[in-house]
Amino acid sequence: MRVLVVEDEPTIRSQLCKVLRGENYAVDEAEDGEVALYKVAEWPYDLVVLDVMMPNIDGFEVVRCMREKKIDAAVLILTARGGVEDRVRGLDLGADDYLKKGFELQEFKARVRALLRRKKQVFKNKLRARDVELDLATGQVEKAGRPVNLTGREYAILVELMSQPGAVVPRHQLYEGVVDESDDSISNPLEVHVCNLRRKLGKDFVRTFRGRGYALNVESTE
Image (cartoon, rainbow, N blue to C red; front, side, top):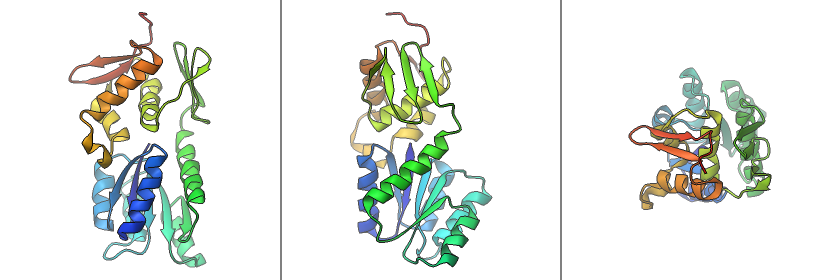
């Protein structure tokens, strides 16, 4: 799952990004509405965490433009003002939820999980391939009935592959969904995550199609 945090206050932005990365989401950041609109047009975000009070282009205008352009990422508005009018305006423009600033980080994480869970409900509840089962409702992955611990980014790749069993998923689609700006220090981060999936789920579980992408190997060769 990929999240964009839009906040003009560097300290708050940094804290929210740290919390989300700690939950194993791929996280990008934007310091104002103009940068936010550029990024949501270029990359497929699952969630945008959006401050309302920003100079030039405020959060309300960002939401309005996103929905006008049919960008369907979930939007969690953060506002310093708790007035009903602001909350109603944000929701009417197309935001999915809001939090008044001063919130506890545990509540913030819970709201994020709830919004991303709703987004996942477009899928059926469970995905299966060979002896691997993935429960989208709980995030649990099992191989031959035994739990497998995956990082958030490994899990995101697995969802994409298991949603299209046997089909070649383009590299850019997987990359955009799981790799964020904090991964710059890693050489070939996508390949690293795929390698880890093979180690945990079977060396032939994911096939590489050079120059194209990756596909789930629906027939075991082990």
